[in-house]
Image (cartoon, rainbow, N blue to C red):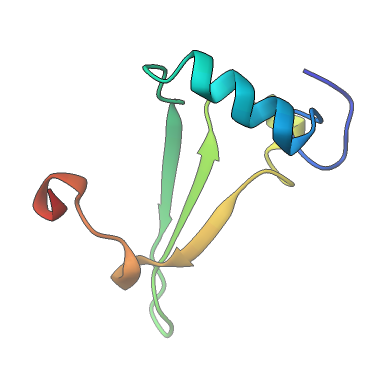
Length: 75
């Protein structure tokens, strides 16, 4: 881990791709948080579980819940 403000890992893209090729069986653990609203679309935010809490504010993906699908239903 690093103190990078870009996220929980400041390795170059090439280094990350090389590491992923070596460890292709590793699937990163992700955490999903759903926030439901009364007057707007519900939101789903996904962050890496291994990422320190203070870096989760910059290492996340958020979308409308209606855009999220069950992985098993897409296979």
